[in-house]
Image (cartoon, rainbow, N blue to C red; front, side):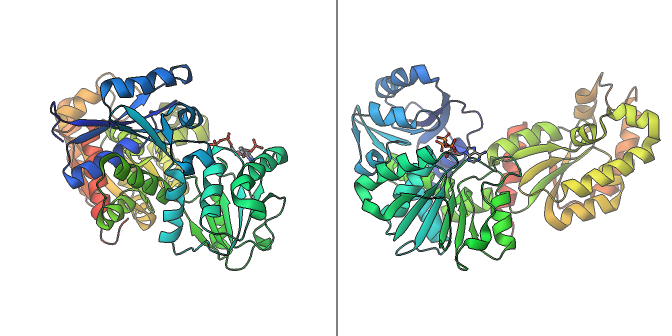
Length: 446
Ligand code: ATR
């Protein structure tokens, strides 16, 4: 990307915003289509939303995505709001048309595009939504707009379900109602935030669903939530939330630029972000695994799990303490057990301790369900990164020659990894991007 005085700015506002992967998605599309735009994230506090939108006009920002908690305020602050977004009462996409801000909602069509991509047709189906917040509102409008015969809103707080049903009823009639049961439904959508970065599920009563029910989630981290996992185990078709995120961005991008990302770009985005396999980073101490892991988790909208942190949490002891009490073998036994547990985690980035490769079975096990990347760095970088670090018992006080000898000794063990990335001359974000590109190009996706 070559930013010049002619480059057209796009962006996203939210609070918080640092976790957003919209910049990754939009800048990827910009690169693929070789357009002169760039897209970045702005942290906007609730009290500043009005000023921010005035700033969009003043600065000539061409397009803006809006995320939590600004979507409802944006709907009232745009100069014009399209009828679909007005029904939902939330705007997630704003196009600056020569100083006039026009608001749209691409969450709803994004949800629907993802559903259809998965082969689910809503026409004439009985559907139910779990949740009655802002996200549920978009999903409800999408399902009703696309011809479901009946829509039940099921929510922990019944009064909010009734409120949403009444609001939607104004446009879509009595097909929509608050309910307590999903008995016989053919499409079930989790539109609560339950399951995000946790093993919780908002629903367990899968036995009452129609046998051909499609079970969908709007949560995308993890890609397969406990809700979807339980549904899949019971034999239901499942639809992950990541596709909704991709499609809402693709539709917004088209509104911003009038350029349509083709199917091949959408497929690439799915391959980049699907994360069917967790990503494991291994490499010598001080090679920069954790920094690359943080970047990678940010870019892919997933969690970073550090194996050493996991060990510390599980045992309640620091790594030097475990070494002192149990020796290296005792530590490696605990580490192998923790790796076994972590290998079952889906769609996360796992950063391994430097010596985990010494037991071949650790890497063999991880490779069954994950993609294993070796992060390789030269001895200079390693010496620099580990200088004065007392938390690495095997490296403490070692000379350059001793570190070189350790590197030579371990070298053959790393050959068992899926890929090697030499990060000696790369920033962590560049290394992470290289890994994302590899994931995307894996035969058949990751
Ligand atoms: P959003 O705009 O992101 O949808 P929201 O307006 O806070 O967020 O709505 C969150 C939805 O998730 C609500 O339907 C909420 O239920 P309540 O209306 O009863 O609060 C639902 N939700 C959140 N945590 C939940 C939990 N632990 N169990 C069940 N539902 C939950």
